[in-house]
Length: 197
Image 1 (tube, helix red, strand yellow):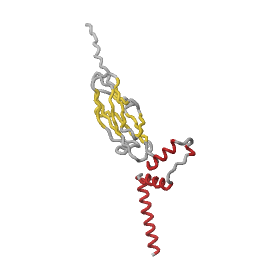
Image 2 (cartoon, one colour):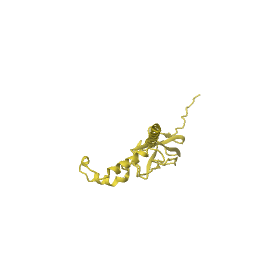
Image 3 (cartoon, helix red, strand yellow):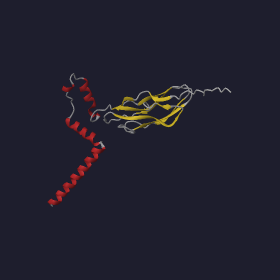
């Protein structure tokens, strides 16, 4: 009796879904970030992958709009785009970042590239420190200066100090600490007044 072995059918490997890059740098004044998601491999079937943003030093509602959803790749499709809207305000911040992630939850017809399933988006601020009140004067002086170390910017020193106080006041920890200090100072003043009387 001769037994012939029948080879099992060969199934093509599932496609891999990933971001095009692991980080992007954008300017706050850009309306939105357009992020490409690639599907590599066998594109003959449909694939679905969920995505979501996550806070880093950039906070949703402050630097960007929270974004989540599901990408559906139809047969033959290899690229999709995720759009994350940025928030352009008049407040100075240092460069901040947030993450965009491809999720394993609900993943269908694909696998994720473990190195490119998450990316960082860095948002550079386009505002002037401490506020934009003297933006034009500072910009004009720095654009027309041959040597920045010798540049004298024509702004009111008192006005600039007031703008610095405004900037510091909007930082929650500094504001809370300042209020506590002022209240404690008033209690101390009242105590001294009571002692005198």
